[in-house]
Image (cartoon, rainbow, N blue to C red; front, side, top):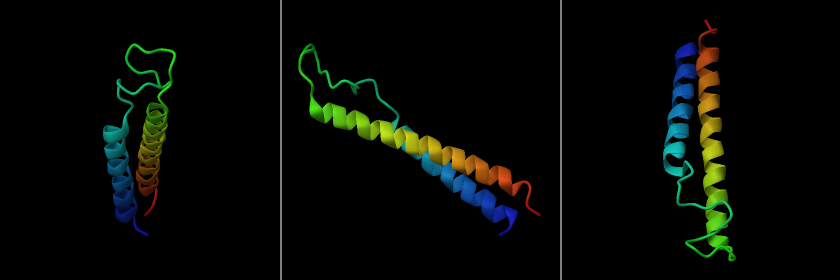
Length: 79
């Protein structure tokens, strides 16, 4: 593998990670506890599931950005 290919793979990982973070970055209307509106005694399980989904995909997005950065870093040391 040459350095240009590894660098390009890193860029693809970075772009995918940024898109995931853009879409699944934790929005303010998603409640971690599942509380909705003014009702504090009830837990909305769909909101809890939504929070888990957004949390998972935001971590995946960050991981993709990190992997992309590492690919780009490694490409600098390959002849």
